[in-house]
Length: 164
Image: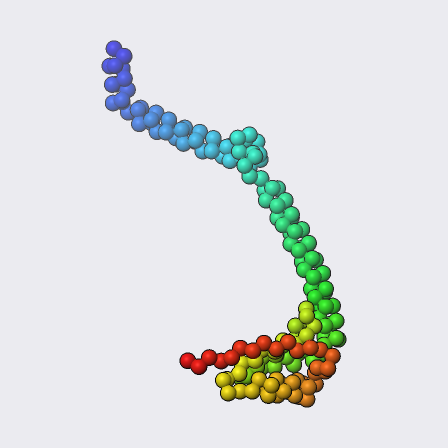
């Protein structure tokens, strides 16, 4: 008998209204449930998700990063000033250093700040006189570049050109 009533209910004119009402009620309940869940997450009331991500954590880490960057900039400014002071000191002691290195096909001469001496590398051909190359380089350093070689030593290294 119960099945008979159910079959009549399914075929009656009331069934579509009842079914539509139930579907509408489910949609409304789902929507309300979804909104309340989103509000509780945004308010930090959902205990399962509250520790995963907070806006204050994001801004706090940005503030720490900004502080780190500012400290790095301050440190770099100090290092830059120290380097500028060192450059001034070197420029005062060796004002001619900007005129170096002295180069040609036969030699390469530079000033070594740590050794406080000149390094001369000679590249003679087989028939070149090494002493003549040295004399030419020293003459150019003294006369044309105005470098006081009397107060410094010149360490010469010879690298003969190979005939291939």
